[in-house]
Length: 262
Ligand SMILES: Cc1cc2nc3c(=O)[nH]c(=O)nc-3n(C[C@H](O)[C@H](O)[C@H](O)COP(=O)(O)OP(=O)(O)OC[C@H]3O[C@@H](n4cnc5c(N)ncnc54)[C@H](O)[C@@H]3O)c2cc1C
Image (cartoon, rainbow, N blue to C red; front, side, top):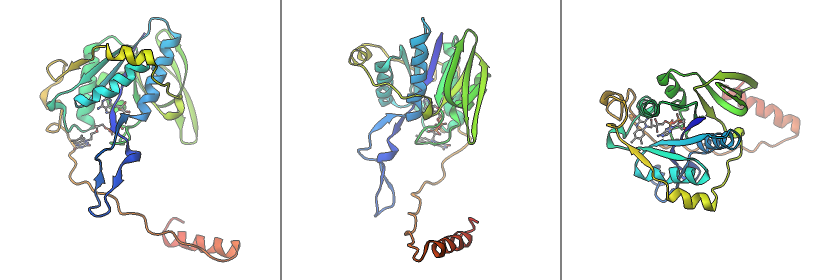
């Protein structure tokens, strides 16, 4: 079985602080990490590898040369190969151009059973790249996968998270699945894994190595452009409500009505 996992290097958004004077984000010194949902996607792939003999797991990332760091981490956890899609021509891409580039690389790889992605990246936060890759490859997809129940020849059964329940879906392979954090607990890197990872060569592809057209990739070809970005206004001060529980409840309801929540 051949499994591909799309992984993104992201700034640790928990550590991003706001400069109170300028109101802008302080990104200096913020570490870059493997996007959390992608760690769950990789873990799901590695668990299948542990069970199904002969499974090969390849991780793919589009990003600048330093994105190699997350690929090394994935190799140290147990992935077999890593591909970095890196070129100035890919820079500034929106989700459409990003998914064109990643789908192009997957098309080049050709022979695969499952493509895993995270549900969402914690920086861009759109949750669009996985589904768009599936559309471009013309393969079925299940998003919000919280459990992989059965892996059989030619099909896989998964549990899909919904707001108020779940769905059990049987899906033919090749297919794309996006992972949520409830799917599993990602493993740590092993010492041998770290050692081996630094001895594994990472394949680097640019726009000439994959079947993509110049008008499908990068900032210039992106249908959306970020026009302005700003730090959201801090929330107002909290309000203390005095009185008996009954009086307080009435005041809370009044406040919620004033703000049109009720
Ligand atoms: C300089 C710059 C300019 C940008 N300009 C724009 C713009 O004009 N308009 C706009 O809409 N966006 C813009 N972006 C953001 C960019 O669109 C997103 O970072 C990118 O498309 C991925 O979307 P996302 O982060 O929302 O991923 P999501 O869709 O939330 O990610 C879902 C999953 O897809 C996979 N994935 C996502 N990205 C990658 C990747 N690079 N490599 C491998 N797997 C990946 C991962 O598995 C991830 O968990 C810009 C980014 C930069 C750095």
